[in-house]
Amino acid sequence: MITCRYCRRRVLAACSIFLASVPCAGVAVAQTDAQNQAAARALFDEGRQLMKREQYDRACPKLEAARKLYAGSGVLLNLGDCYEHVGRTASAWTVFGEASSEAERSGRADDQSEAKRRQSSLESRLVRLVIRVSRPVSGLTVKRDDVAIDRAAWDVAIPIDPGEHSVTAEAPGRASWSKSISTADPGRTTTVEVPELQVVTSPSASQAPPVPALQAAPAPVAVTILPAASGAPYWTGRRIAGVAIAGAGVVGMGIGGLVALGAKSQFDTAQGETGAKRHDDSLSAVNEGNVATVIVGIGAAAAIGGAVLWLTAPSASAQVGTNGHEVFARGTF
Image 1 (tube, one colour):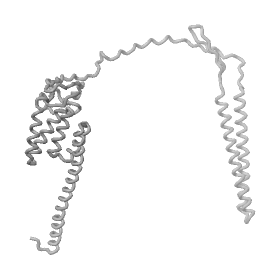
Image 2 (spheres, one colour; image 1 turned 90 degrees about the vertical axis):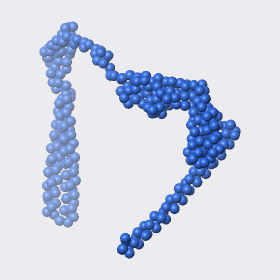
Image 3 (cartoon, helix red, strand yellow; image 1 turned 60 degrees about the horizontal axis):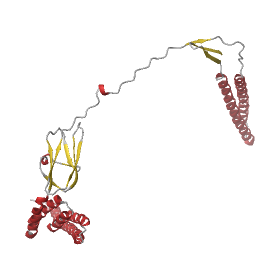
Image 4 (cartoon, one colour; image 1 turned 90 degrees about the horizontal axis):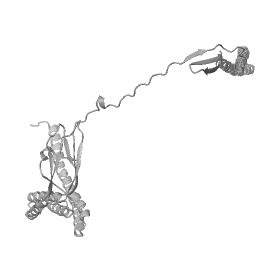
């Protein structure tokens, strides 16, 4: 028993909200059902008009869409009739069975009687398929038209629509198997035997491609270094250029150092001055310092470039010859 006045008020408010929401939910569901039935009716009427004009290929999709929205016995009866006209006997037989059950549930005796009659009239014309698996393997999956078939449906004559069909089988570690069949004769039962799937193995060592034999290495050839030719020049043009450029670079670095010392001296003098003279001398010292930096940089680059020319100058010129058994090399080093 709730004794707190505030608690009682909260409980009563919660109950009121809950009771108010129940009718609202019912109204929303009813509105959805009404909309679905209205759309199903429009699709059904259009499908019926197409059937009257014997345009069954266009009528069946309309009735299929209506069935998804409202699977009444009238819709199912017309869909089964459409399937029968396009030759889909198994689909028609199945839908007539659904129409019979729906008519019985909704108390429509006339529709139920008509559905049973139409379904019975198709019995002798049905095309059936038996998928027989005599030696199943672990993980085996059997499919008909890319739809998996339950193991309970193996070895059972299942009605199918006439036409082209495919049966496939696959299992882990096994080679897949497939077969295409054509069923057209009314009342005929076709049996498909699924063989035992072969184990997939990796190529054995004996099946591996042969390794090509290594070719024998050619016999070594003796190499003889002959004495250097006399009178070869040492001071090549490249060495001379390297010395000249490096020397100019060193001189440039020295000049830059002298300019830098002068700039430092002028800057120190400006620190003891005042007014405009101090400003002018300080600015002049800074400019000279920048010039010195540039001169030193250019000199350093020239010195490095000259050194590179010296070090990369060819140190030997070689002459190579052979008599068929030995290789002779002559050069200056």
